[in-house]
Amino acid sequence: EVQLVQSGGEVKKPGESLRISCKASGYRFSNYWIGWVRQMPGKGLEWMAIIYPGDSDTRYSPSFRGHVTISIEKSTSTAYLQWNNLKASDTALYYCARHGSAAEYFVHWGQGTLVTVSS
Amino acid sequence: SYELTQPPSVSVSPGQTARITCSGDALPKKFAYWYQQKSGQAPVLVISEDSRRPSGIPERFSGSSSGTVATLTISGTQVEDEGDFYCYSTHTSGNYTYGVFGGGTKLTVL
Image (cartoon, rainbow over all chains, first blue to last red; front, side, top):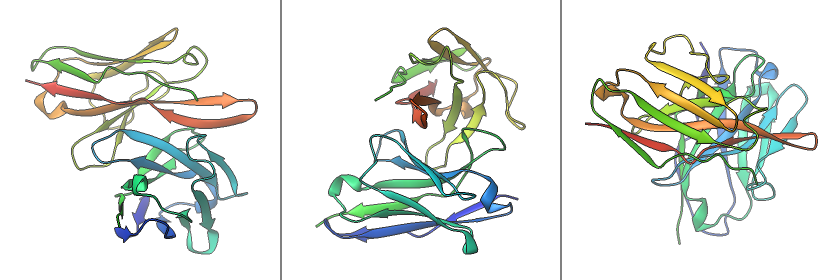
C-alpha cells in the first residue's frame, strides 16, 4: 500500500527558514514523480513542484520557482519542501502527492502539513 | 502563466445531474483530470485522462472534453457528493511541463 506520511504542523516567524518532509513507503521511491501542492486557508489547490527521484529532475510552477526548493533523500524515501525566507503569505496547508504509473497527475496524497507564519 | 477556469459554485437537488466545466486554451491537446475534495480531507482523483474513472469511483461520475472545455458530470447526484471539485491539466512551455489546477468549484446538493 502506498503511503505518504508528512511531518507535523509548524509555526514560524517571517524571515525564518523551514523544511517540511514527506516519507514515502509501499513502492519503489525512485520510479515515481512526487511533489507538493499548496492550499491557502479557504482557497483552492495550487500545484507547486515535482521531482523525479530516479534522476532528481525537477519541475516548478512559474508561481513558485525561486520561492521554494523541492528535494529528496533517496536513502530514506523522503521528499522535502524548503523555504529560506518565510512570509506570512506562505501560511497554508501543504500536501505531498505522488504521480500514478506512467502518469502526469497525482494519485496518492499525504495528510497535509499546516504551516503558519506569523510574527 | 497558464490558467484553467471553473465556475466558483454549482448547486443541484439530490437526484439531478450536476455539470462542472473547466476551460483552458491547451485542453484540445492536453488531458483534463478531476479531483474531489471533501471538507478537511485530501483530494481524491475521480476522473483521469478526460473520461476515465479510477477504480472505486461510482459510475455516476463521468468526464468529457471538447475543444477548450472539459466537463465533469455527476448523474443522480447524492448528498454525499458535496465538496470542492478541481480540474487539473499540464502545461508545456518549450520543453518544460508543469501542472496546473483550476480554481475549484463548490458543489452544493440541496
